[in-house]
Image: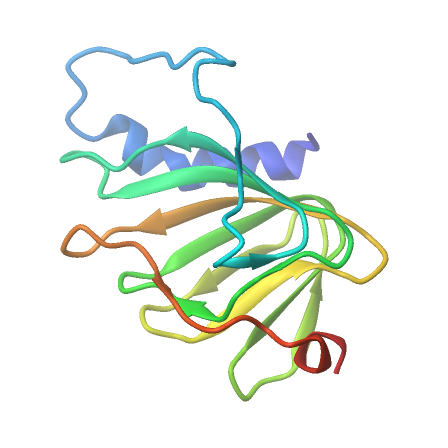
Length: 154
């Protein structure tokens, strides 16, 4: 991981990790099993590696999401917003009605609450990002319909 990415991740997580801690908690690598991204919410091959869950102290969750070439999320929104930190590869992200943007390692994307969007790999390259997703009333995402091939390639 590059120094810029490490700094971005550290800054984004510092509020969550420092808030009201009685003692440090270490979640050992390998203790959080990877999961395939559900077919209802993703097109193509997607792996989600949970990093941490929301709690009374953090109010957000974190995960490393890896998309193979051509893989993407469905349209969705986040009731309390989301930050993505691109850690490897090349991807695309698009808000409803907006232009599709190319994202690369070190890019940090803030998606405001309620903004309909999708993100994933390009058609020829995979991409991985850390997703820090805020929680509101116990919910962090509102899934919608899948992004069509025409929308994805447009």
